[in-house]
Length: 229
Image 1 (cartoon, helix red, strand yellow):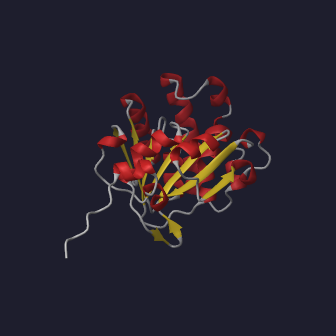
Image 2: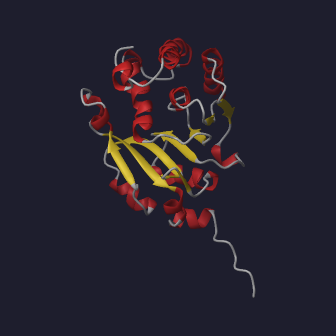
């Protein structure tokens, strides 16, 4: 790997080796399932691993956090994040069974004990999570309509629980339709300044409390009824 050791100098040798192995496993599985385009496969470390790890630059998940990675595809960003945050629990979901089979295989070969992979739609899950991650899965209003009911509220170590989302382009119309903007956003180019590919890519944080105040949130999670006095 060329870039990750430079941008993440605090990773230990085991983590760096796991990320290098993941790079190889993704290429291996991509030859079978076409998880990413040929052009992206040729730039896998930059466009997929480094992109996923931007979340680790953006936020440090508190120890013990439960994280749901929606539309994980080939395990991104979930698997790289699980390597970086071994004391957190990750559930990676996708509706395509073949992709989840690949994720399970890679997770097993990487020796990750903090990862569960499941073929399902997020709407069918019953558990709640501290954070939900996604990488350009769908337009923000639709994605949030899936995940809002799965979110816990509150904060821990100064970090508000909610959605951490990777997406590029002009998102102003999606923010307008959603009814809220991220509490924090960061261009990936600020983290990886030598990579022009990230010039229009952003990582966004939507606190669960903000999402619950939107019309989408109110329709999905009605306010509790007041008790009669």
